[in-house]
Image 1 (spheres, rainbow, N blue to C red):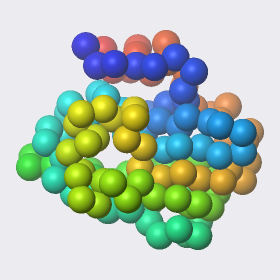
Image 2 (image 1 turned 120 degrees about the vertical axis):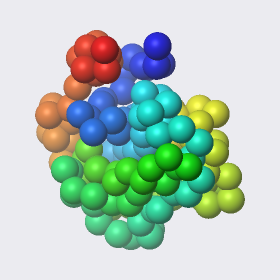
Image 3 (image 1 turned 180 degrees about the vertical axis):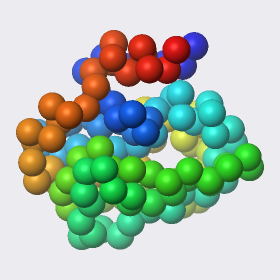
Length: 125
């Protein structure tokens, strides 16, 4: 069973958001990294790029497949997880610790469109 963490927000496309103040840390869920297999590359936007909820912001490539990353929130990228450039496999070790982008949220109301842990667990079954 894939790990799901309480207190995070989840999208149907298997991204999560951990909100801290006006910022959201966005990554892929444990379920998604299991489905992808060994991650070999993460395509990330640049700092200061804008992301829009429901739109693509990058991709994760594994030995099996490539999967677009769909932003669960809108805002401006303030940081990318540079560790993933050299060690994309960190996502397989702990998908929730190894977020992909940190976003300054432009509209916190968008979080209401996302799922909580219980709702996300239900769609993963």
